[in-house]
Image (cartoon, one colour):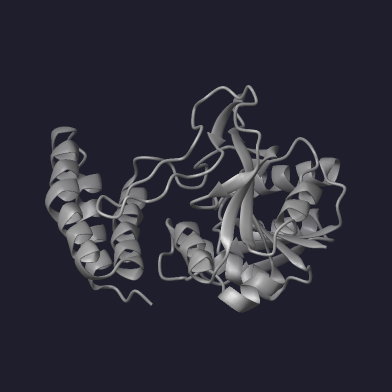
Length: 291
């Protein structure tokens, strides 16, 4: 059985659409676990009433992405664990293919399917990641914004799984550990992918099946919240995953190249709140505990 874990934060309608799409299309044995991350509109109680056979866990505080998923994992019964965003919908069965691929090699630790945009279902969002450049701390998703004509339909190893939909197993989590909760938002799955690889596992993408992503429905783009956590998490990721000269060069680049550039950008766009958010994020990323 696959334990499907999703987080709801003020996204009742999206969560309902995810559950309904799974019920309509998926045939592999599964259970659904919804962690309500302290939504403001009693979403947890509404979900319990609407779906009495779904495990709905109501957290008293917002635990963030990793914290919410880790709470859901504590209630999971399945041999396999699928972390999936609540703003995903499916249009065809996909679990069997992911489980088969995970079991095809002993050293596959986690994998993601192809992800496409729900508003443009023939356009790719993700079919893998390029490796992270160690100084700039930047990488890119493979296939993004390309029309899907079958050019990426071969399963392969990739640098990182995608946090919107990723499958692993209980055995692997017990060996490697859950995602760290220090980030709250952003970079968790990237950090966890490196954690898996340091333990001898590979991360893969299985593009023969796909899911459809509404993308950033719960965290709108270009908001102070997003800018704060992106800035903070980038520094935490650097401090946790790089050592020696590389770490110091990466921090130098972010402080004296990326930060001034973003400061000028938001200054001339008169986006004062975003400007303040990136500075607060950088400060917290430098001083907050990285473990």
